Image (tube, rainbow, N blue to C red; front, side, top):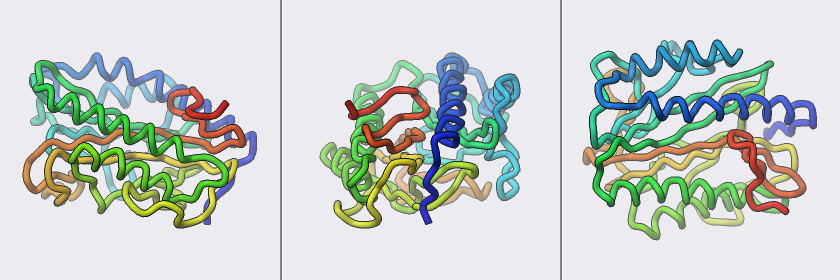
Length: 255
């Protein structure tokens, strides 16, 4: 069942999204050669506490960290480690879900450590473009799979792969609510969308094949062919005027 939020809940989610989004420019400045993913996660944990944000990943099914940090061929759920050191040419994704006053915001960004080949930049740009196209479909009267189909079109037109074993999701008082939001599918399927629905929309794409596996740590999802992956995510609320991106505090597509 999709939980529809009232105006009070939406305002709380908007506040959580604003506070979380304000952290990400500083995160980008922390991603530099010689820094470990463990160091970055520890810094994120401290910054979340300063902002009264409560990590939703730490303690989830035994997970021990406040963020997921994935590098290069790691798609999602990269486990912070003192042995994972950033270097030039890396593609780094940071994924954080945090709550403020009982409501969650979920956000992921992919960053590039220069210098990198232009093809990597084009790949990451496509992930952000796919997110934008998916969000554009999050409006009253659309169906759930319209989001999925828009993401798939944006990705496959550029020849990239789409991870099919992981998906976006509803979000609110908990990190994961119904529905599951696939990154592929035919349009016009699933429930109609309406005001008050809140989704975490998150394309996960690959430069090569979409075959993946879970590493020995039980969390980190990696590409089988070792090619790069990108993952970007925003928390979005559907309103009568169109989608509002809570983790950017801007309106997308609605006038």
